Length: 154
Length: 75
Image (cartoon, rainbow over the protein chains, first blue to last red):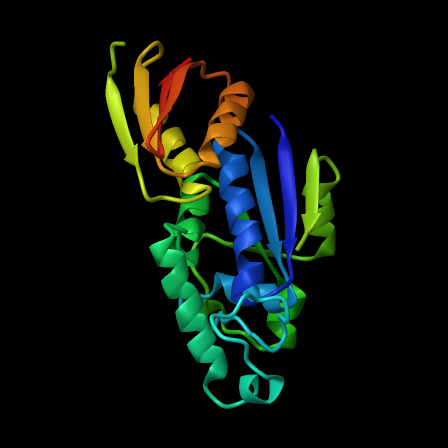
């Protein structure tokens, strides 16, 4: 069986998609998949994904309906508005929600490993995370990654 | 063609047509044929790749008015 390992380090909406899209698709193609969530990527394992947002400020290449000067992008509420608009667009275009892709991954036995060090560092509550995940460190990741056909860092 | 199951993947975008195809095939018997209808033009290449990587033969495919139809046999 082919194997794929992904390290998910980002907690923004745009960077949350690749691990879940590639993970679920690889699993559908018969790969054994493991995703290691570390640093801000850990937030993708929260039961509540409403904190996963897109920042127009941090993504200058993001297509905007109307050009927006940087000082406007900094205003309070702009991030939430951009996130709402992006989610709305995704829904219209038939792009799956993060929640849907994540549960498709779990259904397909994609293994989620949460970085224990990051959990301690940011004092995350394990009860905030979804069920069915494992906790481990760098060596845990190597154990699986050392023997994969595809290994990605997101 | 004799179709055993039909999957309407219209309006869905990558990777949902593939994931739903995989799910539908899982509930079918070897030799049965699944018909998939999609509106995602990317699914043309993706279905071919899915077929070659999973070994489920893609018997036929057609495009008509922005809709893509695939006939895939469960291996």
